[in-house]
Amino acid sequence: MEGTQYSKMSAVQDVRQSDGWAKYLNSIGWKTVRTSAGTLIAIKKLLFFSLMKIQKPAFVDKKELEEIEKIAKKENYFLIKLEPFLGQDEKLILDAGYSKSGTPLSVPSTMMMDLEKDETYLWDKLSHSAKYSINRSKREGSSIRYYENPTEEAFKNFYEVFAETAKRQKFYKLPYQEAWSRSRSFGRKSYLVMAYDKKGVLVCGKLFLANKDVVLYSLGGTTEAGRKTKVGYELLWQSILYFKGLGYKALDLEGLDDKRFPFFTSGWGGFSHFKEKFGGIIVRFPPPYVKFANKILSALNRFAPIPF
Image 1 (cartoon, rainbow, N blue to C red):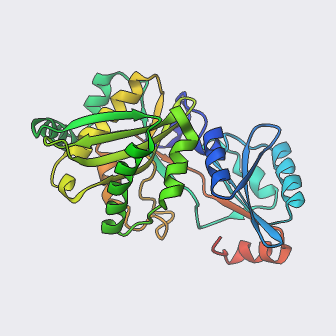
Image 2 (tube, helix red, strand yellow):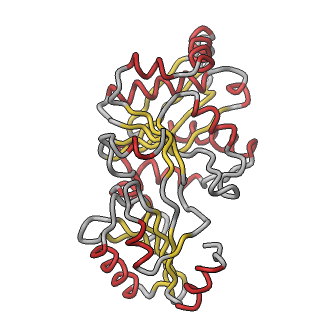
């Protein structure tokens, strides 16, 4: 189950190309512009130069690449990082002076749940252990609650769980204001799904962001007590049904282990194994590409990749 299958699904635009994501980037110090075809470009000013990133545009043709170059020169760019979406003609990117990069900014592989499939089909695709874990969580008396456009009070409760998890598992903890801004920027397209134990104590939570027909799993965490239960399985299963019921067509579970980028995805084996139990479509995106304004750096990068 590779990316070609996802390209046949109805979902065609990544959340990182949405107006909500642009608003979020603006709130944390990035300037954003769009090409005439609508591709979102993020620009970060660094002294006299600019860094530019373009993440998961639906398709970039020769004309648009030329427009991106004009915008880049106007912004006095140092480098452009382009992370293509599925279906991209990569030769066009190479012909425009880009070279492959070994350092992605966003996940290079993910798992997509096709929400247009019926519930019976989705249940049948679950592994035996996932089905057992969901049913066990129900027997343990857990409950799931949904918060559309969550209040800051609800978000703070979620963030405490997220921060605890980040500290315990030693992964990057997005600062509170950035995390809250991410949720707030999407408004009614921001969703918290929270799981509580039989005593009503919050033990697990996930933040989802939506754009058009796609929902992206953005942040999540589970308390130490929650890890001793199977509530994470029930939360994800109920989230799948919830977003399907709202009419979304795809759920992006955001991130799987990818052998093409061992350093970037180091330590992802555990949650990749968890997601794979849900039987979705595994997607491998094209590699990221980079273009330097400096011709010497561009030439060097073709023979000895620079870590950008």
